[in-house]
Image (tube, rainbow, N blue to C red):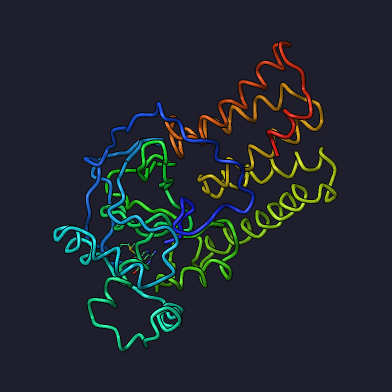
Length: 338
Ligand SMILES: C[S@@+](CC[C@H](N)C(=O)[O-])C[C@H]1O[C@@H](n2cnc3c(N)ncnc32)[C@H](O)[C@@H]1O
């Protein structure tokens, strides 16, 4: 899978994730609040058994199969073969789906056609393709379906060596939990659906519908994408607009992300950009307000034990010092925000 939290890649305007913190402790989770159930057309799914408040760490899960990348099918098979008998059986119970591109890759690495593999080999590779979170495969989180407006954020936390799944909205009893399998959830449908074809389904979430709501959401995403591209160009070339215009663009984008319910780490990138352009304008007090929002949002998405949270917290402390007059706004501080 590719998830924002990502079954496959980084956000388009991502920033440094900081360093691992050896003092972090493994956190408890709230798995007693969820259950796996059949859905009408998405196979199994994960549902809330009770209300789950925003920022709850719903799952803190170790990998059962660690494999970074996973392009080479021979490597997938040998890693699956190293699992214990019980884990191998549980692994093979997960949903398998191998996209058509996998067949070419099998030919390239194994010199065999897909049809020449054994059923076991096809299943083991298909389970990997449908359930890999970039760093590998988890058991229970593999039952979480995709939405382009997810209510859960996934992130691998190297400090506790676990994948964490946090509620980014209040989730009602009975509601299904969703993550986004793709990065760039606020991009347009004709970009999202080809990515989702890798999991063999056509997304029918509220952002993908052809009804009035789907159209309205698509219009908002069109604007969000344009703003995001402007900010990405500004970040790289610095010539797209003035710092004042960039600040306006970042705050407009954050507002649209809130309205659209895109509450994963794309939103924190907008807060980060707002802080950065406030600093370029020399407005440190306002920059501090935006970085406080960024920090609060990281707490919701990844939690206080994540190295990302520590990195943002350290930047926030530097700004506090500048506002308090005990440090000055110099070039090295500005660079922390790039
Ligand atoms: C990681 S698994 C998720 C759990 C899966 N539903 C199961 O039964 O184990 C990914 C697979 O779930 C299904 N799926 C996930 N999100 C979906 C969605 N929004 N609509 C339809 N099918 C979906 C697809 O078959 C996809 O290949």
